[in-house]
Amino acid sequence: MAFLEVNQVKKSFGQGDTRVEVLRGIDLTVEKGKLCVLLGPSGSGKSTLLNIIGGIDGPDSGSVAIAKEKIEDMNEKKLSLYRRKHLGYVFQQYNLIANLTVKENIEVGAYLSDAPLDVDELLHVLGLWDHKDKLPNQISGGQQQRTAIGRAIVKNPDVLLCDEPTGALDYKTSKEILELIEQVNSKYQNTIIIVTHNDAIKHMADQVVSLRDGQIRSQVYNDHKIPAMQLEW
Ligand code: ADP
Ligand code: MG
Image (cartoon, rainbow, N blue to C red):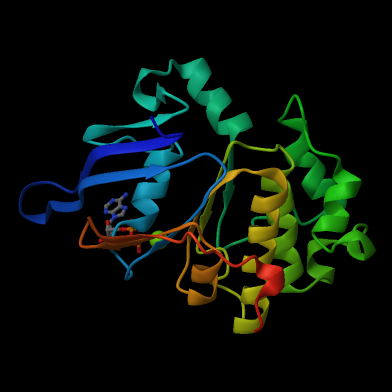
């Protein structure tokens, strides 16, 4: 059994005439420590799928299992633990706390974990050491997203879900952020799923999955993935 297993997941929204089947039987497996990229047009169900994997939303039918444990079988305490300790989430909006510094924002994530990563080391990895005492409005969008990645990754989560993490950034900064996520994956071996429209990441991914109309259209495994450091932009 793979580390992450999504099995025949279906999800609809609305009722009667307005009912829309957003996920129509999704099967997806991701091995531990792999970097999976999820592509698909707007409205194809990418965020819905991530929310179901993250235990934020439940499927109408089908199941999701992490490390052999089905999310649907977790009691409330276990589910809360999964969301707080074992799962990291990065969104397009950084959602940083405005009156806390970069370092303090990352420390917020560390408080949630029994075994957080070393914050100072992480600040170096993220390229934020020189900015650690600044407030979010004193740094660029790319640096704010680095901080948000730090807050998610400091817990050293088993699973990191990134929903269009570069959607608000220009192309160059967006490539740097995707490179950073690849470096985080190599260094900390977290299983990562990224939703993105930026195809620069495809070369760094272990697995590229395309979603269309609520179904997986194609799935490519990249056995020759190129680490970000070796890529020429
Ligand atoms: P994507 O992230 O690929 O753009 P989403 O998963 O956000 O797509 O949404 C897929 C479809 O489901 C869209 O048509 C969206 O309007 C609909 N949808 C998503 N969440 C809800 C919700 N909570 N209630 C009703 N419709 C929703
Ligand atoms: Mg979305």
